[in-house]
Length: 301
Image: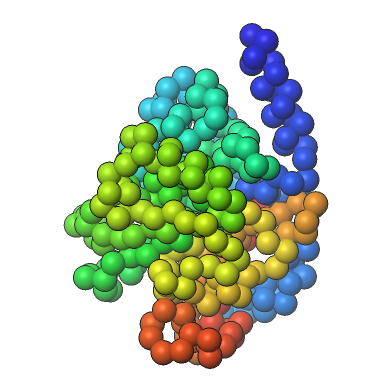
């Protein structure tokens, strides 16, 4: 009981901290004044869906791994069979510091000033990034998918993405893929590797996933162009280096907002290639950037 009380006290303090990014996505955000977001929101041809509600989030606690995932599905957060199956294959207890709280629907510290996001946030991200993977697989049936996880933390989402694309699926069509996890903190990358090896080591052995130390804001051009990019840390503005590494039709999910303030979770979709795409050949250093190549939607908030 004492341990549970201590954790709840930490959680209360943590959730009120302005540094939390992926778990608290409400109120106003400086990104609303970002020129890129303004262009896309004011485009009459851009159908901007209403942001999702978080009313059923934060309540998907489970006593077991399966119960947590089933609650995410019952709440309509983990909606697709592909995402649910991937979540069931990766046990969250292997990616948190204290397994006793592994299935709480809340963010948890993993050390070095970083956290693992709440399960409902991971489920939202998976559902938002699945459509571009399916779309690419439909039109390019033999092309390997490429996914980038920026700020891979404890390695959990890297593994879940890995389970999604570890083999080709036929119904619905989903190509095999490769997942790249990158983090600027070497200790977290080592933690990711050790966590993956606990029960998901086959993903490393098959080269389905790869984790590395690096500046995530610069992306990883060697794996580009990406069909999906997830960013786990808030950006002050939309990062052009990462956006340039999206494939046409690719999507990036990223929290954007002021340092020390609140952030919204955004979905950035690449709809054109007039500015050039990193990773499709030629001199990447000469690739420009055109805002018209992208549409931006607010996902949560």
